[in-house]
Amino acid sequence: MSERVLSDKYRSKRSGILYIITGLVVVVFVAFGVVLSLVFSSSQDRLIEKSEDKLINSEVENITSATGYITDLLMPVFNQKAQETPIEDLLRALNTGELTDAQKWIIGEMEREVEMGVMGLERILAVMTSSPVTGTREVIIAASDLSYMTGWELPPYLKDALSEDRSYLILEGGLPEMGLEGEQLVVLKRTRDEQRMVTAYFVGVTSLQAKVDDINAFFAGERDRTRRLIIAVVLVSIAVIVLVTTFFLSYLLRRRITEPINQLSAVAEEVMEGNLDVEVPVRKGEELEKLKTVFNEMVRSIREVINRSVGPD
Image 1 (tube, rainbow, N blue to C red):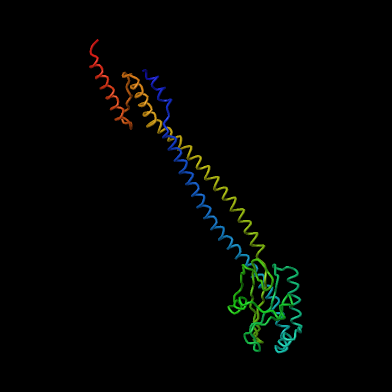
Image 2: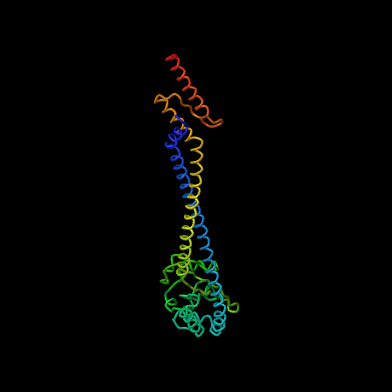
């Protein structure tokens, strides 16, 4: 059989090994892409969480600073006005429900601040924590809502915050004692009247929930966009790598393994059909060089045995 006919015959045959290896490469790179996407996504989630915390803390610092500024304006005036009223008269007024002029003034200012929504303040209290008469007992001396001055007590966690002289509290579960739901920021600003030995706190409550929701919505959108971008990049990278690898493997396998095996298989079929005048081309250094050489020797040996058996014509 001519070399051209033999070549056409083995080229028409395909080895499944190419498809198997290509499939394995695709599976490996898809798995790698999924893992890479998950790693990037997890890393991004951690970064976003840190950014959220940082942004919320920044909001807290801004609100605390602004509320402290308001306190620095109101409390000195209140203390000055309160000095005109003996501390005993102030306490008696608190017990009887009567209001001193200093109380009326700061309550009016507190109501105005809440109505104007300054810094989102929803509740404002002025709490006296120590004095020569009250000792260390907490007494609400003014509030934006008068209901907090009659029969309402500070929650234990607010008392603890005052005793620890904390500057703010973040209450993720809200402030149910005041009927406030959602994440709340409680700002605590300490003031001291050295002349009368009175310590008081300006307590401002503002909702963080809207800001937290806005921050979460923003980062959720960014998270989704980044995740889609990562997935797109990974998929494109996988597609490019798979295509390049597939073409390379296809060439390599076809050149070094598939074609030699198909060529050997085609010649073996010729031998099975009774054609012993065939020979597999052998290239020096190829992977199947020894197998092809042994096959050619086997065909020659068979041909010689047959020739000896038949004898001369």
